Length: 342
Ligand code: 5GP
Ligand code: MN
Image (tube, rainbow, N blue to C red; front, side, top):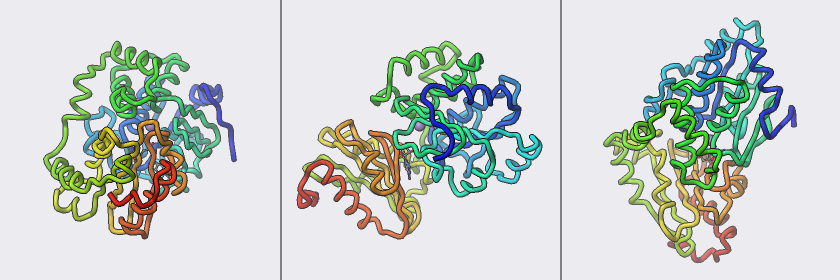
């Protein structure tokens, strides 16, 4: 273990931010609303303080989040990132947001970790310590909520663009303020963001009523795979490369699909097995409080939160992955293996 981990904003972070001029912001691969919202929100805050900011992403921002005011500023150019750091005479400060594990920084992980100091701001229960300084609060609804607290600690006024980004971050990570990570403080912050000009109906529309026909076609194919196990306590869906090809949908379009199996009354755990490319499988798990899916994901070297977690496999086929996951879930739910036959 290197560096320090603190609950409550470490003074080192506010001091480093005040003392530095150039910042590189990072987040996790396949960034979701919290990842992008907290990154662009923090970029707004830093620029409001007269700092220079480079937002790095491994892949272009998903069409689903193209509506974010900051979407156009995200760069996939690693050379440009290095040049930005060089111009700071190697004194740029790296900040990783919403990434609970350094492996989640993606394919350029080693190059990114080579630039120091790295400050980590995260709210994952399964957080694996990395970076020189960490601020990790697993009880927080979202990294966006933590970025708001950071702005307050820095004495920065929240601009409309920043409020927009942080609201998207909080709204998406709380399932629109439905999950049990939603605390009184979450609503207090949301209220402040509305006071800064955010229109919740407009943002909801941009997040949830903004899909392509291809996405709905893919949803039809995926929902047709719905299978129940363990006396209907486990619901499983999957997607294959063929389904992407048949529907014309993109990988990002599957965000939110797992809400459908989770919505069933009897279901305690929803499983979404995503074969993005042949042999490359990612698994999403969702629970409703009865089962700690972060612990299930850990069995497979993944992680996440109590009610939302995931992990990755390569070189295994979909049926094999499903039976391994079901075996672990059966154990956890105390169900006999022979009741997994649907
Ligand atoms: P999702 O299912 O939406 O991809 O991810 C749900 C949660 O699990 C997120 O908080 C995400 O960070 C975490 N997660 C998903 N996949 C992985 C993984 O491969 N490794 C780790 N450590 N966490 C993951
Ligand atoms: Mn998050």
